Amino acid sequence: MKVRYFAWMKRTVGVADEEVAPPADVKTVGDLVVWLRGRSTGHAEALAEGAAFGAAVDQRTATFDVPIGGAREVAFFPPFTGG
Amino acid sequence: MTVRVQEADFDTGAELDRITRGNKRIGGLAVFVGLVREMHVREGLHRDRIDALTLEHYPGMTEKALEDIEAEANKRWPLEATLIVHRYGRLEAGDRIVLVAVGSPHREAAFEACEFLVDWLKTKAPFWKLEETPAGEKWVGAHEGDDAAAARWEKRRQ
Image 1: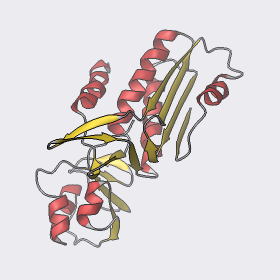
Image 2: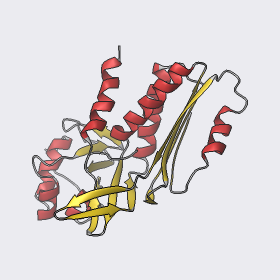
Image 3: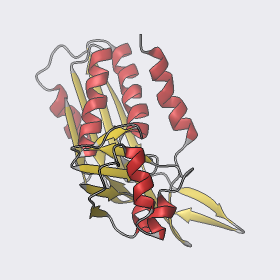
Image 4: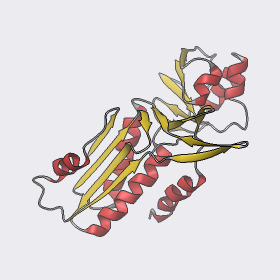
């Protein structure tokens, strides 16, 4: 599964994207967040509890209870500021 | 129904001609053009002018999100033409960022749907602004007013 980071999260994590293979008990976006925090201090900081960020599963906005089984791409990003 | 995400500038007149030409059912065309505004930010004792910003986006998701928003507008109002052109990359004060145009038989639907599209794309399309200040680069925080503007359309849903 590919995980992507955008805007300031990309800089904090240190990479724009990475291939990960989480264990079977990582079933939802929220589970993935918790699991990713253990990868580095940058991950832990970017994905910290209380940090303002959202997620997308296969390029559709997703809440943290959305399952990630079979997903090809999960993305994390700060609130949108376009327009 | 057209959505485009591009680095290049757009020609507003040519875009509007293209979406209305040959469609004689359009009685009103509402248009919004978003520009990069010259802004001042206070950083401690300094007051910095922001001359440019870089718009990052999520290729693939951006197009899907804009198409979803456009489809929602077409569900809510009787529209004959919709166009969203959103730029990304480095933009300077005065540059065009976004074009939203809506054609309908009547002006009321055109005005409302145009405002709806702008409000929703600000909060639902994956764009992030990185401002250039003399002190360095700074990511723009989400604007609460934008969430409120988008939310009022949620309430109107029947």
